[in-house]
Amino acid sequence: MDKPRNVSGRKRIIRILVFILVAGGIGAVTLALTRLKPAAPTVEASTLYPDTVKRGEMVIEVRGLGTLVNEDSMLVPSLTDGRIAQRFLLAGTVVKADTVIFQMTNPDLELSAVDAQNVYKSSIADLASLRAKLESSVLDQRSTAAGVHANLESAKTQYEADSLLAKDGLIPDVTVRQDRVKMDGLADQYKIELDRVAVNEASMKAQIDSQQSRIEQLKADAEIKKHQVESLKIKAGVDGTVAQLMVEVGQQVTPGTTLAKIVQPRHLKAALAIPETQANLIQIGQKAAIDTRNGIIQGHVMRIDPSSINSTVTVDVKLDGDLPEGARPDLSVDGVVEIQHLKDVLYVGRPVHGQPNSTITLFLENSLGDEAVRTTVKIGRTSVNTVEILGGLKEGDKVILSDMSAQDGVDRIRLK
Image 1 (tube, rainbow, N blue to C red):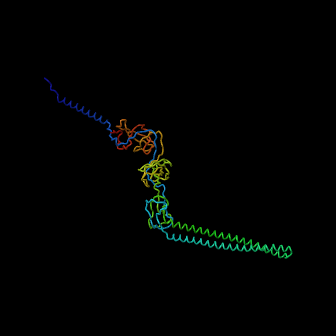
Image 2: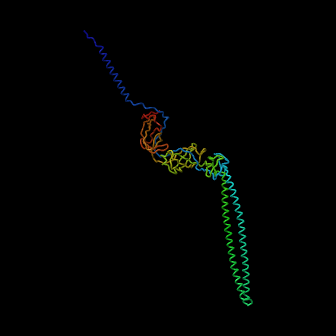
Image 3: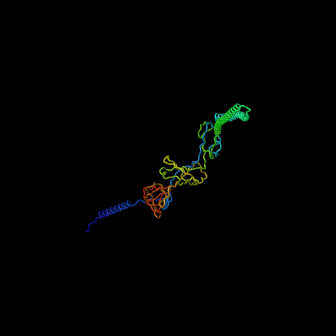
């Protein structure tokens, strides 16, 4: 008699074996999946900015924003007290040196100038009168001296005649002695009269010189007053353009008050604001290029401000080339100053992020250009558009310079 088969037990074993196999398969798949690397994100290559590492000469440059400013400008001051009575033009007008900008008034000054002129003319008349009076006095003295001289000559003749007669015994000797005394007395008197003439002439010259000096003083005073009156007409003083008028009609001003500013619009320089961390690299005479948005002008550094304002230093660049059309004061410009030329160095375009002498990461493209791997790069000196490579890259490597902060969490990207 046959034994009954245990079919239910066999099925149970089969089910257990199948469950073990399925569970083991799931575990193996799960383990394999956990060991897989995440897929590299894909980035559109056309949106990136790549560059190739090169070897050769690298120019260290410093960039700064700034404006064109007048190299030569002049402030027009008031030379006297007065009131602005009239304005003849507006800011922006082209002027010559003798162009009148304002007319001032000062009645007291104008009256003082007239009085000074009258006193000067009166002093000239006084000099003429004094000269005539003194010359007449000198002539009188000369006439007196001439009379004494005539008497002296007559006495000499009488003395000589009486001397001859006395030798012949025709007249007594006492008469000759009397003639001698008279002649000597007249000689002394004539000498005194000549001295008086000399003294009068010297006195006349001294008085005339004194009066002449006073006239010169009065003339100078009259000229000063006249010049002050003329200075009530405020002139530009130089050829140029009126940049600013600083007073209004009716305003009372004092000496030294600035009335206007005159500039020469074709004599411009560039004033660049250079970060103070880079300003120490700049020296007088270094070459510079100024971009006016309508052309680039070559120039050189002419002045470095010794002080720092808002973490920037003002550097003045003298423009050596011709100004392009549209160049004017206060025009915004972009300037680059050449600091140094480096020979035979490894360099690449400047990345979005990267400070001098620091270590950064860049994505290095593979030979096919379809993938890029994050690479550590050591950079040295930096310029406006390039950086020096000290390590991590070699000549011919192609790296991505764009901002890759969106891929901070990955070390590899796919390019399409």
